[in-house]
Length: 135
View (cartoon, helix red, strand yellow):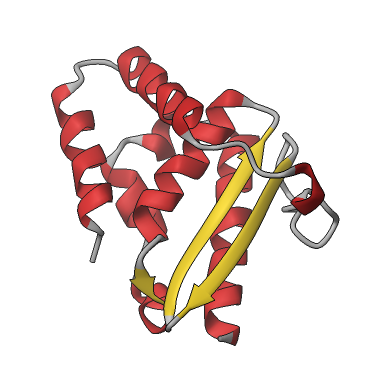
């Protein structure tokens, strides 16, 4: 149950031949994510479990989930962009039905991220799921 935006990423990854190209693409996606206002970078929005500094500011409006995020690491900011494509615009009630490990596995991310980065992605997904479940 991936969004059209995530399907576009999956198609692009299918087209890219090696992980280095995919890695650069993730970084480029991160560069396109607008910086989060520093006033939102507070302990309440900080994601624990990430090797880098990561902040997520979720929002549910009219039953639809979205979030903005930021990180001090470009690859992590790119991973935030991937998660934004996966979750933004999805009804909050449907967030729990998205199997993030399976969807991200389609991109080959499971095989190429360090253990710390994988833990960070898992922590971001848990935060997203918790916010949506509380709505």
